[in-house]
Image (cartoon, rainbow, N blue to C red; front, side, top):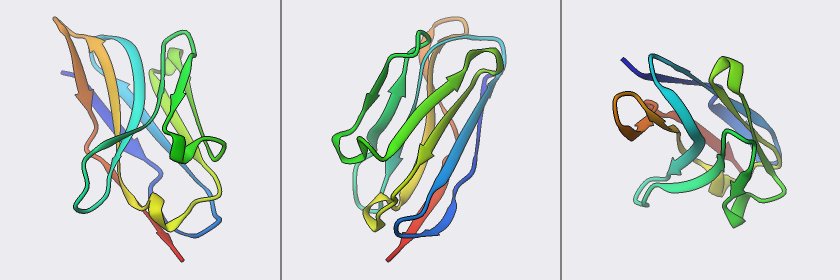
Length: 117
């Protein structure tokens, strides 16, 4: 059984920082890992994504402020979030695209990030 367990969300003031972590476990091979977010009343959107080779992709709204990284040996992906803004407030979901019998997307349960002004 594949599990993605997130940690690191919370409440922070504007301009502050948070670091999200997501550890994947189970019998599957991971390709891309990433973070998505969903604010109330809005669609889920990509925040950042990283391939197994370390290539990264960011949403325009977080470029220069967020950094995604991963530890392949630990099947863990991180999201360092700096200079946080109130508009970054959302539930953040970890995503992994992997093969556990077939190629598919796996999702974490989500972690709340709230940025106060």
